[in-house]
Amino acid sequence: MEKTVFTVVQAVLHKELTDIKKLNPRYFKKGIAQISVLPEHLELHTVGITRYIPAKTEGYFDVFIPLRFLLAYSKIESLPVLTLEVEQGVIRCGNGILTSPEIKVNNIFNATIDELPLNADEFDLLRYALRADPREIANYGLTMKVNNARDKLRVRITEAASILEGFRVSYTDLESLIMNKLKA
View: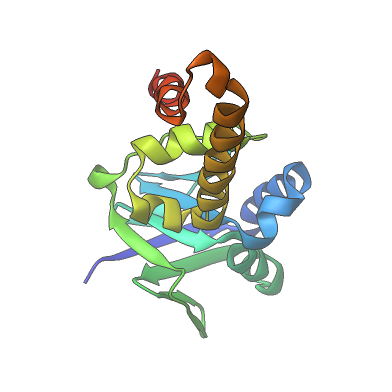
């Protein structure tokens, strides 16, 4: 069973999470944090933001946890040091146990992070979706946004093709042009 344990200073973790919440409050509500558990520190990744947090660590994995869960632990726990044990679908902190299918643990060497900018638009989402696998998109909670961007692109290409059909520009021509830009 894949399992990782990390111990952090409660005040440091809480400060980093509240800073992230201030920078991007809309993403924070439904967003997923990727925590790379590395020797002597954590790398906390969210869309467009990376924070480095000193920690005592065991088991080096990429952990995906909803930001709201992490903030709740950092607020509720009164101990100066937090020790979190994370397994597939489970977080343990002290006597508290939280289970959720949103909590995931992956081998760190299989990670393919391609970070999005903080103000990612549809183009950024589609470019990211071309390079990432569906599981990674789901881990970041971006599946719906990527699907909406794809739907919007299809509609806009159809509209543009109908406007330009007199100039012998087809849907396929426009789609190829856009795909080349996304892949560049």
